[in-house]
Image (cartoon, helix red, strand yellow):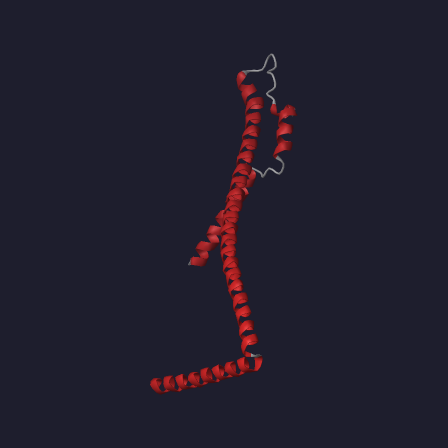
Length: 164
C-alpha cells in the first residue's frame, strides 16, 4: 500500500518536474539572457501594418511576444527561487559550521587547560623524583599498584558474592 503511494508520489513529482521544465526552463546565464533581450528584435513589438486589424495584430504579433516574455519571466522567477534555496542551504550549512567551530574551540580550550595541568604535574613529579630518588619513587609506585590490584580483586570477590 505504502509502496504504491510512494510510486504514485514519485510519478507525480516527475510529471511536475517535466511540466516545470516546459513552463520555465532553467536559466544558465541570466546576464546573457538580459543582453539578448535588450538587443533582440524578437522581443520588440512590431508596428502594425497599415491594413492590419487590431484582432489580427493582437493574435499574430502581440500575444506570441507576450507569451515569450511570460516564459522568460517564469524562467527568471524559477532561477531566482533556486538561488534563494541555494542561499538558504548555504546559510544553514554556514551556521552549522559556526556552531561546530565554536564547539571545537571550547574542546580545544579544555585540552589546552588539561595540557597545562599535566605539564605542571609532570614538573612536580620530576621534583619529587629528584628529591627522593628514582629507586625510592619506583618502589612506592609499585606498592601503590599492588595495593590497588589487591583492592580490585577484593572488590570483585565481594561483588561476585553479592550477585549470587
